Length: 621
Image (cartoon, rainbow, N blue to C red; front, side):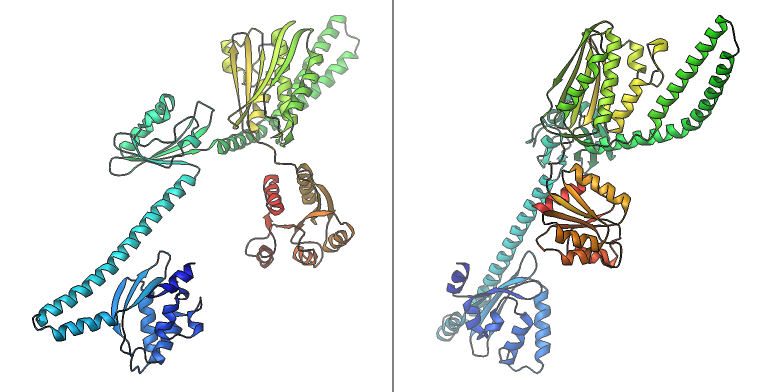
């Protein structure tokens, strides 16, 4: 329809791109200039058209055609709005009006004004009343009007481009995972990308004209007010705070605009903070391990010597009183050894290994596991409102931590009471698990020191390492732990990052990797994602398996393999319809790596299970 419409207008039209290649033209363009068919096809070069027109005398007598071509090409590449009138070799007078396009290139409209010019000449010849000066002015005015019309068209196009740029800029800011805004000198929003609600749920999205204290709420505003005042004073302020509603961690930057206002950017960094907490705890444990390992070794040697000497004393026929002292010394030394073992557990290499975990089953197993150790008068109940979906947690570490808390609650309850384990989510950011009891609660000293190693209220029956080990477990996972007293007793609350498990995959994967250690690691990843796995170490083994096994759903292969053949050679032999993912530790500059990117997705080693799962899902899609 567009082509038909352009062909019906009385003017010739052509559009060339930034490389001066024809994009579109109408039929009058071809007929006006008597152009051959190949010069009106999309992609035809502007230079070839000028060369053809010069060769047929369109521009009169021309000594050097290429000079004319170069001149017209340079003028066209300038992409400036223009209006000219030109007399062709055949006597026809045409006006040429050109305007640049937003992404480069230009559009030109050619109008036959021969009749208009003849009418002006006839008017000049036959009018005796009008002076030559008046006719000249009229002609100048007519030409000026035409130029003004061309300029207006260019201004309208510039206005359209600015509007388009503004709309694109707003769309970009609204798609960013951050709240971007501007405050005037009075603290009222005069610009916002309407993302405040996504960064801080519960706040309004439409906040133009609203004061920042009203938009954020009094609690959050009190936390940012001092930083905002610094920005109004001309100082850039970047800070973080924890938002009360669902404990999101927010990073805010206030930047003065130099004219009395302040630019604002707010980002939800909860996941980043969780990862940072886990990394910090790992580093602390590494430092603690360095400090304690040597001491633990020496103390272990001393305890061994003490136990050996006590054994010799026990065999010397001592009196009953002396035997009791020897037995007490042995018991104390053994308790010291148990304490050293627990210190080693706290500072040893305990790396969380998250896997898809059914929290309903985990909590039910915990109830069954803990119940036999409780007195008959102590009840244990589980209140679980978590979503019925698998979560990425280390089930062993979580269950150990909760069992430790249940046993502590049992000691607090004595012979009768109630222990409750409750679990729920907070805005799909945290998994909160609380272990509450109906005991006497924490003392003020306990609330302050219970997480300190070796602090205990159980006398010689406690080591003071139970809660610190739970705290260590939670921090390693990127979470947090808090203690509180309730109207009916005490409660220990664990917060762990909420991470839904990726969807379970199905099918058979051919894994091709020549390193035993890496192959084992990749196999575990695939199995945890729900795949069955067959393995090969070389091109020959893998090729035979692809021939013998017909239900392979995916091939995951290293680029470098045993022997001369590579993963690329294997890929060339496979059915093109069979999904294949290559992996490598080669740098991007390596020719093999660059060649692989042309044929299949490439995972750069090392990679995570989440990265592998995401790429497999992309391939399946």
